[in-house]
View 1 (cartoon, helix red, strand yellow):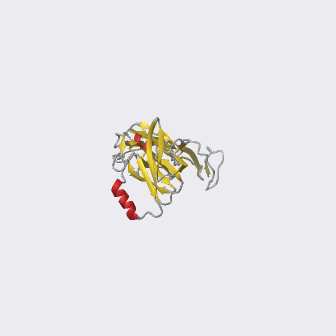
View 2 (tube, rainbow, N blue to C red; view 1 turned 60 degrees about the horizontal axis):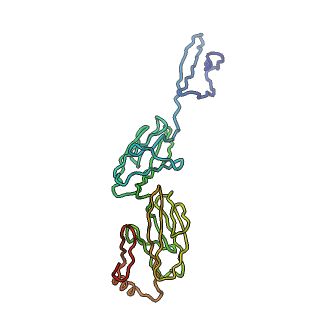
View 3 (cartoon, one colour; view 1 turned 90 degrees about the vertical axis):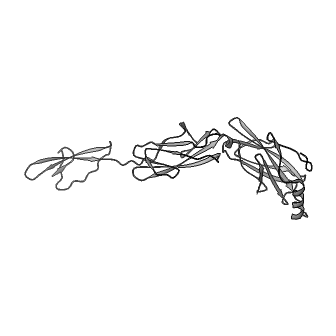
Length: 272
């Protein structure tokens, strides 16, 4: 006979009973009574396998990153940071951590990330629980310059060409007396506005007048008390203008821009 309740109840040969796993590990005492009356005691230890894929913290160079959602984190670093060290720590001791698709390590992992030529870096982080479940997290590292950086500018869905650090241009025959300008910031929490219109977060779309052959539009991005001004040049190309005409115009006046302290210089022929 066999019992798991200290001999209060016995079953013959086989016993099946649900056990509440109210501790880890759970110890179950088993008592066996043989036909000759001998009593033998056994101890069954049940270890619970963790399914916890939670993350305790993510830090960069010792500074804790900010959670922007359940699985997304961000941090802002100085412009002169080129090789930040990312550290991720799992909540559960038995969970494994992988940073940037590298080999997983138990509980905690650290990796050096190369940002020599980047102002924004997206780092994947994965937590794998003891039972094999996993959750993917994302850390985005922004350099300070990225906060006021433009992601893209479009005019009537035509993507503008970047001429210099703060100057963009669109030249098209598909521009009438007005055009729809859409500007998007690289940093998702930045405020962005076109000319003197109301600022919006991350993306703004406005209709601007383009009655002249060339229209200058200003775009302003503000974040964390920093602001940068951008210039968008919208050029209307007449329907009867040939590619040769456009090449001649560019050879005469150039297609580049000149800035002084971030301000676009006006052009008259070859004089700025």
